[in-house]
Image 1 (cartoon, helix red, strand yellow):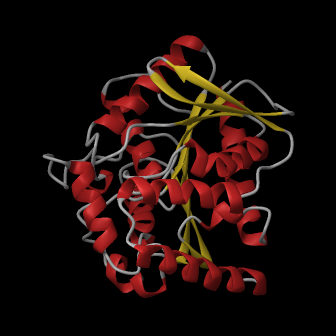
Image 2: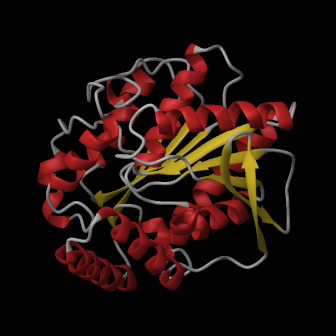
Image 3: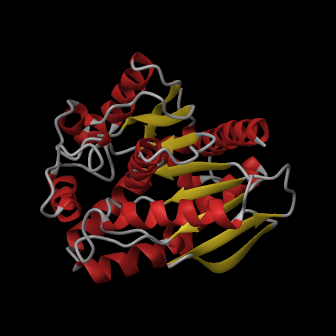
Length: 303
């Protein structure tokens, strides 16, 4: 059962996001507003150093915990419906994952739509992963992300498999967006309780911006339609109060049916990427700790 504090925070988040939506800000101002809110609301964990960096041609930042368990790297891909989000908006969450896993995390600032439609974000993720492989030979790399970033992490893993590149050690995904064609039932049936996507309008607009001239059913735009065999071990966390619930459930089912190993953990009463409230409520801390332990185990096992 959701905690009393999580129920209060759910209504607060829903109110604040509805208030922001009513402002109907142009996209550049919306991005800035989300960054300002992240800096104000999301708590950095103690003992994690932030270092701006470039990996190849792509910029981002290293998040390095004081205590490092073993060699290994996590490449983190932020959410934001492919049209928003940045290192700033997701720094605290990626840093908490670094602390929980006791491994360094590279938080990638990939290019955003509509200025840079598909395959720009995937190209950035691919180039960064390959450059990390060159710079850190024999060091295992895991992938993590939330929402669109989790879908992008999955598309990256599929691309690496198809290109016969050394695969990631594991995938740790928070509420992945896998079906940009929006065919799953919960895209509509859960909208009324989803603070981020109370209608399909924002998701639909973002999907079209991201896909550009590419079909929404393309397997690297929407991994829901991809072949999902021979992928790394995957852990998915999702809540019951989110429109992307089916994306997670069906992803796990299809991965396991095709021979990959995927586990999905459904958190009652939780909403889209509730993990951003780590340090403020038990359910967020529980999820981040679980994802961190999963990453740590697979990175140590691959080292």
